[in-house]
Image (spheres, rainbow over the protein chains, first blue to last red):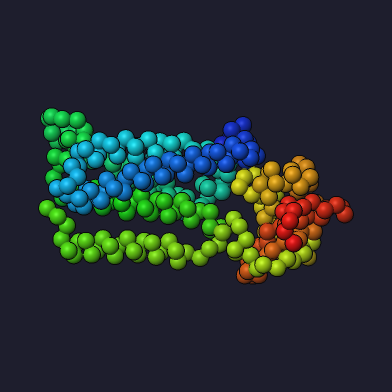
Length: 165
Length: 128
């Protein structure tokens, strides 16, 4: 573990993240944009999964628009996050809040993948969004509730990293 | 099926709780000056450890047997003040002028100016 941390800290990319002024600031900004896209897309989707706007906003149409945006936001956050991690691997790897955040991100992404899988297996027709909408309501509510709690907690853990030792 | 009233109430409560928990976390920020005392102190000691880099550097300073954490600038701020590689390195004696944490027991301060061998390096020109 220590060897891996040292190896990462010694990379030229890590050095660049440590010393560059606008590189660091730019990557930081990309991370915020990634989070904004992910969270901004996933919250309305989760609320719809929980039953909000039922009968007025079709789930399949909403999922068709918001799932790719959330996934794109997550991808951007993961890449920029990996670079931010490189700026101080030992600090982050040793911070319980950071480890909790990574656990929550894995849980959130894993839960979405499991729901995705279930939707793919469930129905024979339609695209992924159509199939998602055909899952049992209780199943969808569970996915929405879990996602809402997990992503909110991940966001709080990540932000609080800057405010604790 | 729409949400039952209880479910909706529980959801609202959970959301409020989350927001409250976020706001209640004490602001221990390194960023900005809200966590500091508002008054400058002067700390003279020998640098024992230096971790420099974004988003800001942190020095461990031995001041007459007391170990302090001194926050310095990020690389561009230190460079702008005239500091070079090796100026903030273990073994260097320096005087740090800046604001300590409002809780003095933390032994944590944020440097505004650093004096090394009689030369002053101003990290925050314009601050007292």
